[in-house]
Image (cartoon, rainbow, N blue to C red; front, side, top):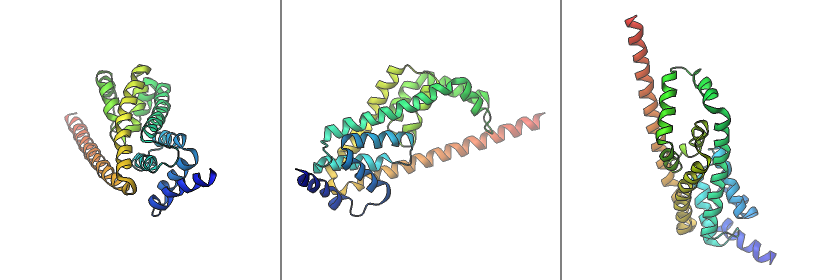
Length: 227
């Protein structure tokens, strides 16, 4: 039985990790050693440490399920990874809850170009659209993890946060895990497409930040000239 297990797990290494290094190879070793719990652990850590990319871990989990290694099936991989997403989100939600509005206001108020009106507007927006923001944010690279913090800061209802996070994470996880399951040894194609999406998000955020900074500097300059 042990020999059969080693033979099965070697399939993933021989067909899918021969060109893998770094995070991808490490992720495979964790999933092979711990099975579904390993996949959940990786995704929970990915929520806390964004440099661990879900676009690698999730397709690999799907590929692992497709080869029958690590004791995973397609549905068990989705369930384990969604559970891991939820645990990671709870941790960041807890951090946000601990910070609370006052601590957050004190921290952000020390940042250059940020004033209390910006904080008030952001908080008001999250109170109005927090549910949609959490749900869709779980499907957007970069924001997937960070969105849990303002949910905690604004003390969003915990059950509501849990349900929205589970739904959003389940969709994201199902898409990437299923893609890795279908693509098999070509799972890395999924990573390539998600990387393009991630880069688009980064560029859009960078442009928005630059525009905001320019407008804020101009507003301050006009205010200074008017004095």
